[in-house]
Amino acid sequence: MKKIHQEIKKAVVARDQKKAESLKYLFSLLEKELMREGKLTEEEAVRILQKELKSKKEALSLFEKGGREDLVANEKREIALLEEFLPPEMSEEEIRKIVREVCQQTGDFGQVMGMVMKKLQGRAEGSKVAEIVRQELKR
Image (cartoon, rainbow, N blue to C red; front, side, top):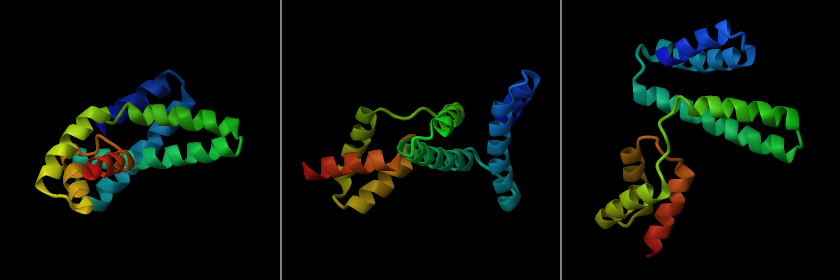
């Protein structure tokens, strides 16, 4: 939250209104959770931001299909901004390595997914992980 707050200040000073508004929105999402729960861990903040990123990506896809180039540019800008505050995604090879380790313990898709997602701690999209898990379970 501190980093977002600092970036809001920088955007306001630079008179970048669109960036400031986007950052304020992200800050409000985190602040809302903080007020609801009384505390906000780094993992919870990442989870909230990832949920918002997923939502933005879905909206981007719909805007592209609808031919709304004005909204596409805005969503792309907000996605890039969101990604600045999230840990970098793991590569497919790194994910596959973890999936293989977990698959040695159990062969059940649901159990593998649960264990892998817990180990990844939000550093990969669930759909990407599920695809890799299916591939590895077929082997």
